[in-house]
Image (cartoon, rainbow, N blue to C red):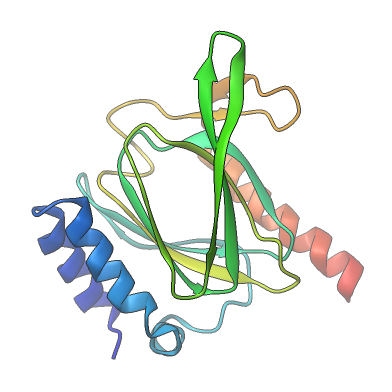
Length: 183
C-alpha cells in the first residue's frame, strides 16, 4: 500500500545511499500505480503538486495535461522520475558551441522509472489524449536550487533563467487548451 508520508521517509533514507537507492524506492512505488492513485487521487487537473520540500529533497507529483509539452530545462540536481499514469516522453539535450542540440530520447510508460543526472537538460511531452502523472524526486530544493536553473525557448532554443511561474502557467494553459477543444 502506498503512503505519501512513508514514501517521503523512504526517499529521505535512500537519498543518503545515492540515486540508485532512490530509484529503487520510486520503482517500488510506481510498480503499484493503483495504490498511488488511491493515496493521491485520480489525475484530473494539470499541475505541480508539491508533496515535500526541503533543502536536500523535493518530491513532486507532476500531472501533465493531454498533449502537453514543456520546454527544455535543467534541474542542476539529480532526479528520479516514476510514471504511475499515462506516458512521458523526454528529449535530452546537450549544449554545444552552436547552441542546444537534441542528444537522445526516452519514453516512459506507467510503471517505468528514469534517473536524470545533475547536468541533464530535457524537455517533456505527454503524447496521450489523457492526463499523465509522475512522481519526481529531486536531490535538492527544486524551487530554489543551489545553482540557478535555466530553460530554453522551444523555437529559438535560446537559454534564459528558469521561471517557476511561467512553468506553472504552462501547465494551466495546456489544460485550458485541451478543455477548450474537448468540452
